[in-house]
Length: 498
Ligand code: NDP
Image 1 (cartoon, protein in one colour):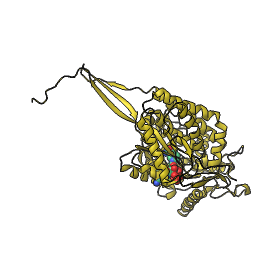
Image 2: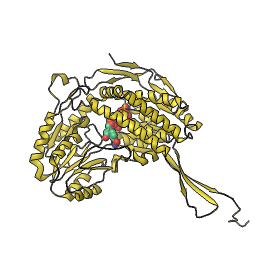
Image 3: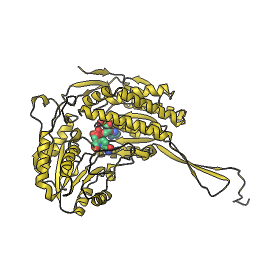
Image 4: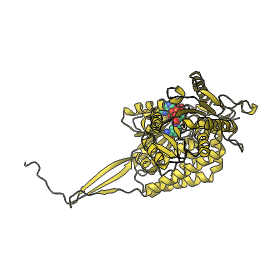
């Protein structure tokens, strides 16, 4: 029995509605492959209606030109509502994604924090006065909303990723059409139910926030729609490229947060207890289904035996199970298809000569057979030419490469098309700073892994993306910049004599 059957879960022009052609899709619990819910599956016609509603709401102007404090109020009220439903949302996220309840609770808190951050930032966002060099002229630079924004999110952090996008987009005065991953749409639906109520209470036009559900074709329809002004996309590299191509026809603004192949560098003078501990968190949190996962361990050769033995020992102890169960440390992969993809990469790595030190297959416990589990895996003896080192695996697979010199490890870490995040472990503060400066990555942690705050920008160098989320730059992504010049007492200039 599905948890819910919710055919009317597309939000179009302020109304909750079923798909025009009545189609539905099953949402699956990755812990046991049971059906969690049946949700509407939008068609291209539904996308068209949602975009037209967002266009009309934007062009009507009352949201775009509302005082920033009014828009901020909607975000703050939505943040309050998220906290009121924190536990319910966390359970739903765990059921849908398989992550542990403590991770889901942290996601609800982080989603709340980003809504509050952009509420505060937009209310304080100043225009800039420029010195024209003329006493009779006043010049201002102001920031205005871009227009209709398509927001496309992946399955690993559903609630958090959509909040990273709706918070700055709505704070800036845009209208939106969101499309979550078909695999994990449940918390996004719940969020939009809360948000819509707050928008109505604030008197926003009916099409300010729209939600469509469905697979990649629905995302593609949004990316190519001529009335969409901006696409903000988080997902894989191949999809990101196709979004960029689709957006090119009407020169939409594009913000892309794509994948990573993130180095975690351990120098010989690192605090080894902490470095081993964080190497596990970096690689195996949410079963490695994290864009910034530290899936590539670059280890100083002198540490090889001791470090990898401890890593493998602790990886074998990681407790798999239902994210709802106390004491479980990591859950399943998100789908059967995704686990098969990870298993293919794993088999390829072993065929290429990687040495298995931990994990390497599905768990044997009877209670885990129905779900999409894979044991945390440590592969030793890897090198930069291997597919498993070059491609994003997005699963619980950690590769180990060795290095001798600082220059060598910087070159190794940068030898990838990606540039999202990574870490360096050393007790030499100067070396930490030096290496951080040389890494071509959007985020570098020194003696840590994974922390972030909404005030600091997030995004990728190279093919990990374009644009930034979070921080002041995250708001600017959703704004056009306009220069307004005013001559106070205009007089003829007679540039042309006649
Ligand atoms: P995908 O690229 O497969 O999908 C991302 C979103 O795009 C989904 O909503 C998907 O729909 C949709 N989509 C699929 N095809 C198209 C298309 N042709 N045009 C427009 N949209 C489309 O990524 P995953 O969902 O598999 O997520 C994993 C990826 O996300 C990883 O590569 C990961 O690194 C990246 N990621 C990056 C983050 C960052 O901050 N840089 C953060 C989190 C994840 P559907 O799922 O329904 O097919």
